[in-house]
Image (cartoon, rainbow, N blue to C red; front, side, top):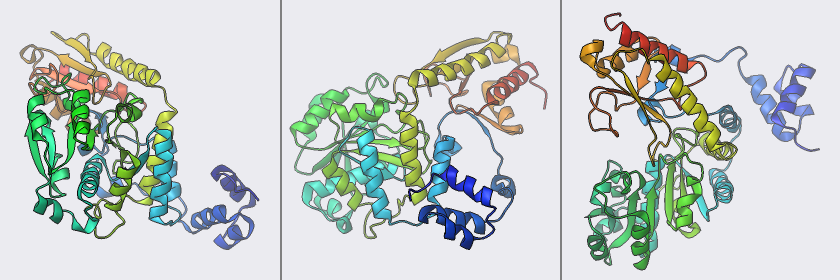
Length: 430
């Protein structure tokens, strides 16, 4: 008998009025029986709201996919995949392998690994490169890298807080500035190069080496090249664009534009290197990635997120984000001295951002004070961290409110517009 879908199982259970796990097991196929048994044993009624129980306020995210704001909300399809995966134990390595094969096929690459985020993916790429360089076993990392003085080459303008993800493996980061510096930096200790996509020359005037040149020179020295594209979705094509350019590894955050679980990510690349990354990952005990465990629920959710995002349309999503952005802009057009600008980052977080620039002396409240006021209300509203921060993002300055609409849930656009209007027209109101 063919296994029924989740919907058929639930419908049959409701029709027959099954009162026990035993009855469900007797009449349903094996997989559906387990689901029915779990449902029959579960408490009835609505689930507890643990945010409320713990006193943690739910917020309206007009900022973006920031980790400190718990990134994106998973779409229903992904939520269901996570919930279904929680019903059954499986062999974790089998799940990792099957998930990687499915994702690799869908994203047009040789190999894929679901990781516990983009930072973990960078660690595992580094470990894989160390293993490939000197036949280093997982249990020998980071000691072997430290003893041999292994290095990862990075542009000085690409240094960032995620350097720690590489240093965990025992490597040293070697900085370069010019193309000539880069050529001279390669030696017998070089295991990998790392390119931070958001700091490419079109986004960072201090960066002197473009992707193509960076990649070509690394390959001239037979050194694998990793691209950090954590926040570079949308557009959807980026999920295969950089692998298509020839990068040996590319990492993405799972909980940002892909809309998967926050504690998941993707490492894509050449199969031989992805296999080495998997050897250095959980559930292998004596490995640098042992603490970077991805649960069965997150692996299933990441697969579902990939399937979901590939069913979406970039243009349609951007139209909706822009519609919401214009809605907020229109609601604030009567604010004295207000000038609005819509900015679309070229690379990371490639979605409309609304810049609201005005004279605080005329309006009676600064952007930072507006942010504090919205954060203190119920429900709290979080604006983009660039609000009131000069030089942090594009043309934002101390007189600019910055927000993005792409993480807003239905009905929240109106709430954000109303809250901003009230804060800017009634600055002394509590």
